[in-house]
Structure formats: C-alpha cells, structure tokens
Image 1 (cartoon, rainbow, N blue to C red):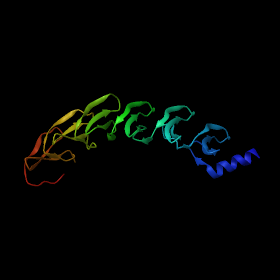
Image 2: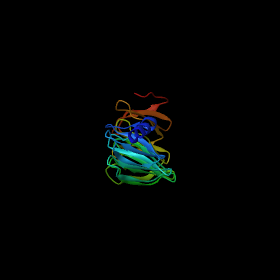
Image 3: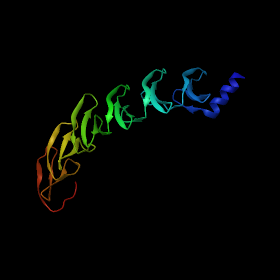
Length: 222
C-alpha cells in the first residue's frame, strides 16, 4: 500500500530532475526522491525548480526564494523575493526591489543594493545605483563606481558608455579605453565604429584612432 501511494504521488505530481531524480509532493510540500525511492531532499518546500548544470536548484518557501545543492544543503537562504539565472552559473538575487549577485558557487559577491544589474560580457556586469551605472568584474570588487549615465553590452571587447552627454568605450575589464569625446558612438563592427562629433560622422578603430575623420553628414556601419 505504501508503494502504491508513493507511485500515485510521483505519477500525478512528479517533475523529472537529472540523474534519475524526481520531484514529489507530500502534504502540499515538494521534495525529491532518487530511483530507490529515498529522499534526496525532504518535502519542505512549496516549489523545487530543476537543478542547474552546476548542481544547484532554486527553491521556494513561504513566497520567498533560496537555493540548495544536490545534497540538500542550503547555499542561499530563502530570504529573496526572486532569484534569476545569469551567465555561467551566476544568479541575480533581489530583495525589496534591489538586486545583488551570487557567483557560480552561490556565494553573494554583490549585496542586493542596486536598482539594476545586467551582463556586459562573460566577465563583467553593469550595476545601477540611482541614475548612474558602474562596472563590476566577477573576479573582483566594483571596478568602476556608478558614475555613468549608460553602459551597454560589450561588442567586440568594447563597452560603450555615456557620461554627461558624451560617449566613449571601456575595454572588457572595465578600463577606460577610449575617452568620452563623441556626441554619439555606435558599437564596433569588424573592428571599426561609427562616431559623431559636431554633427559630423567618422570612423575609429579599437584604439580610438580615426581611420576616417568626422567630415560626413551621414555614415554607414561596417
């Protein structure tokens, strides 16, 4: 009778995990069983999401979110309003409308004090505090404090930024690569970018050197 009941629980409420694991619901709470019918994660949560490629799963309890590892250990406590997957195992965490960041081991490396966070490339994130943006490297502290009006996703290892109405470029490590002297600047394509100065367009290389001076009324991207 016990095994029949267990089968019914799995059949009607199961959600397949990796490695022959399955989510089951018992008295309104979710847990995880292995292929021997033993609990890997006891039924303590309102929802258990799929394990990621790094061996961690998001869990929901009392309308808040956390994360556990494959041994059912808590790696992020269930205190967050949301947890969102980012790149290479990193996750964004949020509390009261503020965002932080946890690394691939689910260690919080940015406290949830920022208004927005988004990826710039495989190694850097843009963080917003108030009206301004800064740049954070996933291997260090805040590389650039929030001073920019905009920071856009990297293209060809160059990150466009705007400050006080002028545009420039950072390199992939958030270093100021090309000074903000342009009225507007486009992303790099095939090693070159279209830039605007005094209502005229020209083209620069990745070092910021002009290959065509800004003398054109219009210009096309490469």
